[in-house]
Length: 220
Image 1 (spheres, rainbow, N blue to C red):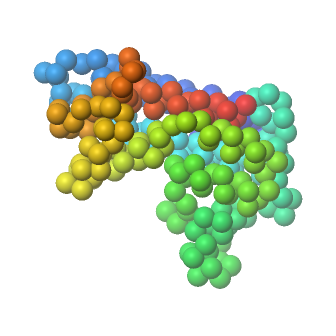
Image 2: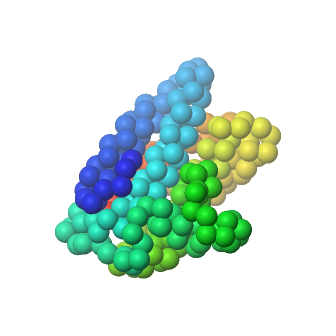
């Protein structure tokens, strides 16, 4: 995803990608138990790609703010005029969110994307936008007030699928009790494909819907 002067473009790009992943997750969550191998492969892919898609969206959203973009509802966003380019914007984000690294660099702005803050964390977008005085800071904070643990818990499962070791397995399985899901089928894929207490669809689909809602509120 790329920075843009039109949040409607960013919204459509992000949600088109995310909704394709959601469709795959929905299909996978309905597979019978004897097709676990397929579910395992598909859910692994979906979780890692959803995590990446949201991270890319958040970064593109932040960088878009210095372009004086227009929201879907027609509001123009402005920020500190001294932030003149993307390098300045990332520098400001580093100052706000990775201050120790920023201080040690002593003004060197040659950041790589690996040096940057973890964009999947809601606090990064909130704090970075505050650092550059975005005019929509209140709206950004409000968007993340949606009652969901999707961002935090998605990362736990992403780490499991990326590394698949005992520690990441334990952390992922520990999420189940928060949603009233039994860990008797002792595998993260089965947790994600199970509905949380009082819900009719798979937990992973609830996370998709929550993330889509936050993206909509941010772009609105």
